[in-house]
Image (cartoon, rainbow, N blue to C red; front, top):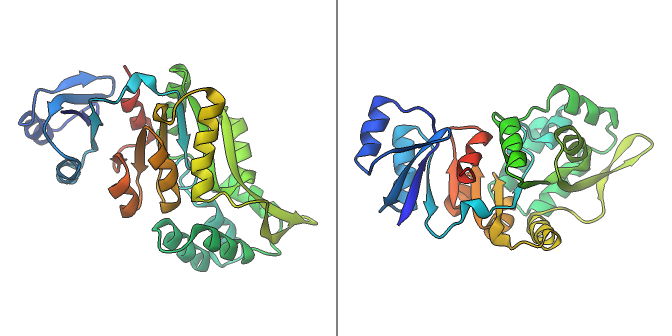
Amino acid sequence: MSTLIIHSPELTDIQRHTLQKIGPLCAHTQHFRIASVNLDKIQVRALSQKLQLDLNLLPSHLNACGFKLVISDMDSTLIAIECIDEIADMMNIKPQVSAITEAAMRGELNFEQSLTQRVALLSGLSEDALQRVYDERLKLNPGAQTWLAGLKQAGIKFALVSGGFTFFTDRLQQRLGLDYSRANQLAIHQQKLSGTIDGDIIGAQAKADFLLELCQKMGISAQQALAVGDGANDLLMMQQAGLSIAYHAKPKVQEQADCALNFRGLDAILDFVRL
């Protein structure tokens, strides 16, 4: 049997009436739970769409108090934009680059190859464009700061890993006080983008490897890590974690993840780790 988490501090009369048919509602901090439900993930996802409410199953064997690490994707997960698409907009080629980005996130294209193609299109762009994207367009997704503060209060480390660029992850790590980060290094020559990546590409396998590397460094098991992502290149990382959460994610990711959030902000992830 599993516990059903209802990711909302308030329920409409219709939502409450429907959920009470499943079992008694128990109020927790910023959410409700129903213990010992006999539902599967497909049934829960259908009910979630019907009620327009985030619902997830928490397996009985999962120790929610045991999480020591949260590892998260950056673009369209921690932040509300795809940085490479916004950089491309500075060259008036956003539609071309966005189309490749979307296909890669859906899992229709090899991520490493798609990134190489997209970065090549940025060749010659002034390095100043990156700062403009950070200053003018980069915004955290709803609930991000509450989420990070809650994790810190619970003593849970946070790692940001991205198929994007260190220009943004480094600044976010410093600004938000994140514990770890890893991303791709854009090659820059004479203050202009060279159209290539310095070093190995941080793709799907590299994200999974980073999770395992951090677990080893911290002396914890991968079952004590919670992984969050939205695109196909997050799936290998999510498969390694004790709990995986698809955040406003592509259909393929929602199908494979343990849990999904489609209505609430990032702070709803605290529902999985709060006592």
